[in-house]
Image (cartoon, rainbow, N blue to C red):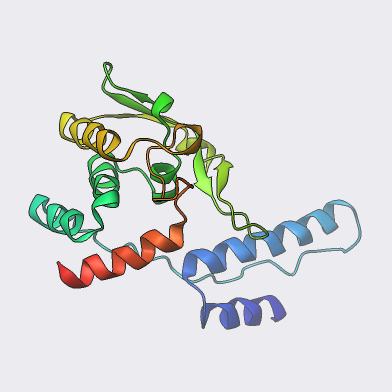
Length: 187
């Protein structure tokens, strides 16, 4: 009953998927305690978890994507086109370097992202979100053209990053999020 109360309490403030992940950690600890004969049985038996309801995702139209791209600061226009045209996550786009773009083969190697460690103000390369996130994605011609124009206009950042600040430093997610909120409001 304590575990069920914990799940109920977590469900008041957290998303169902987050509750499930949290519960899985607790259940793993108790199952391990049973395996090691520290307790006779786990209290994580027959726990009702919140249902994850999948909502229908309506992708933006081409006109909507272009309106958002145009509403972003010019330096980040290609970032919007890259994300929309490839399905890459924000950290993957921010961590994209020239050597990962295979221009002639029209593909992008996604094997890392730019992450912001909690104890640092400097973004750094990190593995993608999951092992399954390591992949090769197609590079549509319109995305390649946008990236090429971006490099011509702004150059590259440290380590060959495609997206860098005016000062030449890696782009922090917070800067993009501020610009994104403004762009969404304007478009």
